[in-house]
Length: 220
Ligand code: CA
Image (cartoon, rainbow, N blue to C red; front, side, top):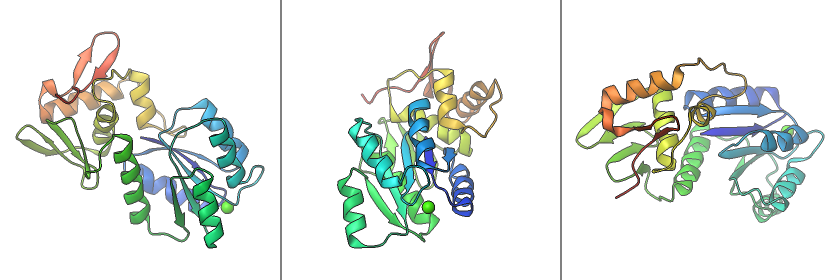
């Protein structure tokens, strides 16, 4: 999961980036609305966390512009504007959720998981293709009768595959789910992570399609 964070407050931005990376999300952090607009064009994200009071282009305007351009990606507004009209306005402009500052990080993470589940078309607190189960809060993974704990990056990789079971993801697509702009990627990271996952869950859990990438099975 790669998240675009649009936030001009340096302390909040830094704290959010660290907490999100700890929770195995890749984060791209930009500090004004215009950069947010360009970031959406430059990189595929699964979700936007959007502040409203932003320099250059206000968060409300950015939201309006994105929806007018038919960008469908989920957007959660993070704002200190607590008037009822602001919240209604934000949701009506196309935001998926509205979280009032200050908020508890745990609540933000829970709302993120809810959005991920909906993207995967599931209401349960886990992602699954029937045989492989990823619990989004505890990071527990079950495959057949094996239950294991994966590292944060292993979990993030498997989650990326399980969000689109039956779809082949290339090395660079997987890397995009794992690392934000400010993180450096080792060239063999994906192989290393897949090796680790297969060792814990069995080789057949991830299929390699030679020359194209990797996938997990579609639900049967
Ligand atoms: Ca702000």
